[in-house]
Image (cartoon, rainbow, N blue to C red; front, side, top):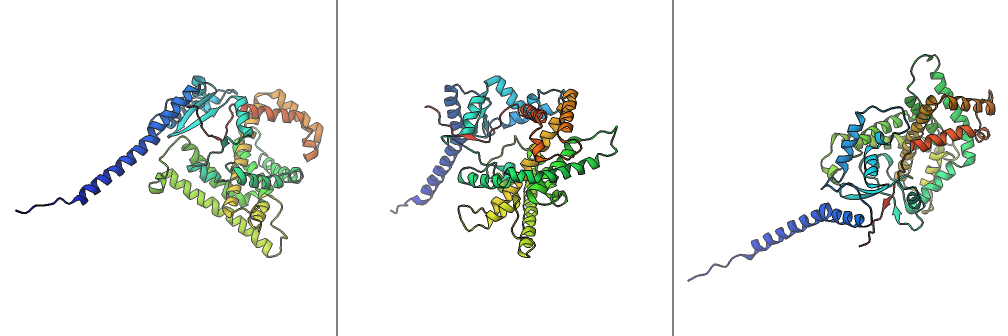
Length: 403
């Protein structure tokens, strides 16, 4: 009588597959559910509250819904704008205090608006706080330039920026800035009685100034770069509170992601074209060096033999993107906000005008005279204070809760 032995191979394979699936499921649940709830409980035990964590998306959907609702509400002419421009921060600060924890997906964020604690984070003497790495659209715009760099890379890039924008360099930039303002005023001739979109006008002005002073080119040459950065900024703002599973965009891209990658590629190629033109001028003997402006400093560092001073071509491109974007967008918005306040306060508008006439008369502004404009500096500082109602820190807190 014969016997039939069961083949153990299929059962072993089935068991192994089951264990792999179970391990993957356990890992996913750990990162998306158990660990966030654990951190939330520990932070609550230390007095740090926040909106409850929601599976997978965290609080991104709530923040997005608040911002969409805010856009449909009229804005009164007031300095009280936080509830309008950052409704989620306004709501959660009111509900949970100046310091609270929120969630971008399964990643916790400690939001700080307490002044003294913010100072500790910014001083960062013990290196407890590191800059968060840019992701998604933020990486497309800034890459790993000065704003997002940390550690030795930040020190190296900061030195380059300091050399390009020290006092004597800024002094040499004033004539170019004055010429750019004259171009703007020329466009304003004959507009008496008409509305002027000052935000767009200042966009043109700041773009012109940055191109001339930092990259040695006119606005015409940098126009294409600024247009693409402006488009990428618009796409980024639409997706600021959108969270997707990391790596998913490599397999399945949304229309905005596809547009973002296209613009990022175009910006990179346009910057490299400016670099190639500068290199060609030096190679032909028309320039003795790569220049003393910001781009020239970056190119010198890119060709350095000393590894401690050398930067890669990717870093060069990211630094250019950072200054094109951060310099233009922040300054442009700041100027627009200041004009709003001067229009709302005619007295200070007249005081500022008198001071400028007293200092310069019929002469063009100069570096020495700018330092004497105390009223103007007061106005700009006040606008900056009102424009920044809450401290935005690009720092990622290393959470070490007390067990």
